[in-house]
Amino acid sequence: MKKNLLLIISITLTFNGLVAQNWTRYKSEDLAFVAMYPSQPERTVQKIPSAVGELDMHMIMYAPQSGDNNTLYSVIRSDYPKEQFEGADVTYNNNVLDAALEGAVTNVSGKLLKDKKIVFNGYSGRSIKIEIQAGFIYMNAYLVGHIMYITQVITLTNNDGNTSIDKFFSSFDILNVKN
Image (cartoon, rainbow, N blue to C red; front, top):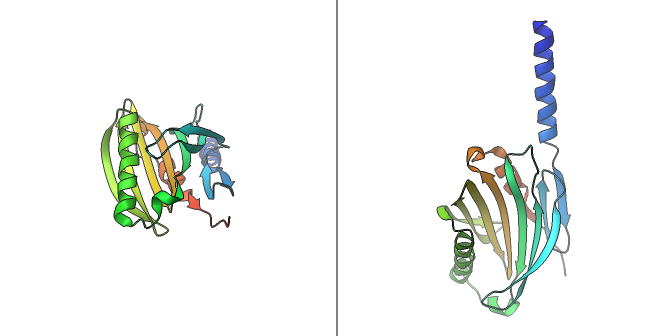
């Protein structure tokens, strides 16, 4: 009986581990990125006002209904006017990233807990963690020329620091797509 119980527990743990690793690869040629999601995400586009005019914000999101450590996984892409970035240097790009992430903190009435400058494939970026009511928002933002990519995971307080956060972030990559 004891051996059967151990066998059942072992099979259950193995099966759960296999299910947890079965993420879906999402590739978008037109948005020029690839990322792994726990399940097939949904794609939407929304017009947003900005200091440089109305921008299209492309959002590829997956919001698990249950059985996941996180409440949202998303990649967001916004294209700024090209002329705004002619002759842009690292300082200019960092200022754009600062403004975008400060806006994110303000929009969710959150508290900035982590703010780190990063480089991704040679592009300026930022990694932040925002405390919100009942949870946290993890965000990485990358400025690729005039294009802003934001990867984001939202988790509840009791699931903070789970391995799916890093798995999602590390799966993101920018595609070299010719226009």
